[in-house]
Image 1 (tube, rainbow, N blue to C red):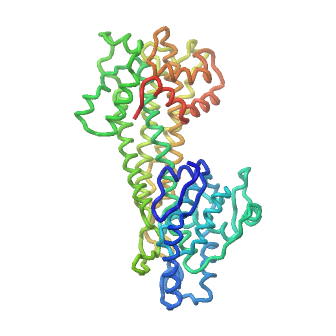
Image 2 (image 1 turned 120 degrees about the vertical axis):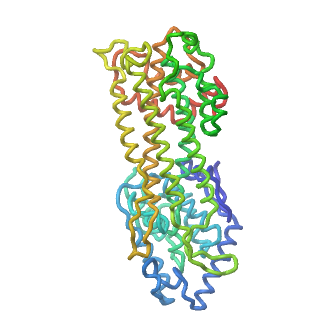
Image 3 (image 1 turned 30 degrees about the vertical axis):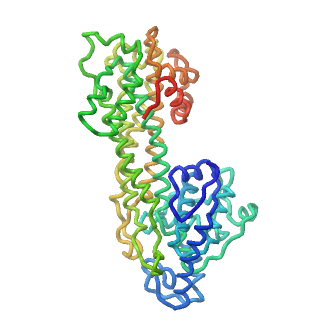
Length: 512
């Protein structure tokens, strides 16, 4: 996707990812320009009539009852942006800032914000010139939307504030705009407020998280299947009829994946009729679809919430089709905060059960014949012992991060904003949890592959052979200890990218 057209209708999740990550070009459709012009005409009429309307002829927040003289209303909008660009901390990743800018542009283009098309043009120009505002991590409470983060984007339109330089350092916005051939804009009434009042940062993070987690949950099924195979587990708990009697949709999809991945394996066949084999496997093996499947259901819920938010007008006040300008609370981030918190809990638990399988693979008393810590020479060598320590530490961090942010409201603005969503914080910690999950699954993939290599000369499943072919050039075969950090890093890169899944699907068929 090289171009995304902005119309007075929602953009798709795929379009958000394309602009955020792949630098897709943004083009504003004429229909969107007309919608913005119509809503701007309503604001201009309010100005002419001298009516008191929040954000047009009054102050903001606790100052909503303060009337502002007509000659100072442009000054009001610029002052709003400067005062609200008050964030601190490290900059947010480029992909989050670009998603946020696109979503704010989408909101303006819906024709309910009362801004001139020129304001939308300025946002599109920043995206197309690959100029990324420096947006600090701390500042948003997710109440009147993501005020501070969006203000750090808006202030760049004025030729002020900071941008991310190519080397990741902070640069003054003015010279960067000039070098890109972009001119600062001058805001008119209502436009400053329209640039910063909305849930765009929260929504951007949720959409990116959904895209990442959908892939990782499929790879979690891959890791669970390979671990089960390496530990001589049973494939019987994954039979489809056992999941039809508990009709949880995510569970059925996950079980179907694992069952498919375990077919045509000499390793599985080697113990299928062994009466000494355990009657029931441990929960971390047998209940993998119940956990990863439940996470899939949470992901479906989060995706639904995000799709609804893409349809939503989240500005305040809004210009209605009949010409009324009304205050609203649609900027409150509770729906997104809840979804991000719930998704964080699910992702943390998928990582937790993955680490338990790693522990079993490394424990000589429970791994059914594998050497201690998957080292052929334990004692002199430690194998993957400390890789499991790393995984355990990450699991502990994810458990802390899974504590919901959305229950932690802190009142602000002289008690005008007396209940806030903390949706931005929920999105930030969700990103960390998902990043951590990628590492946890990489450790499991490495351990499962080495366990299967130690089962030779038995030939593993086609899925396992594809995984071994991808991991072995990085990690080699189990043997003398090596510098593990770069191995884990490279295996993680394999797992998070599309190629390994594609190779496995080429061997066994499409995964869900």
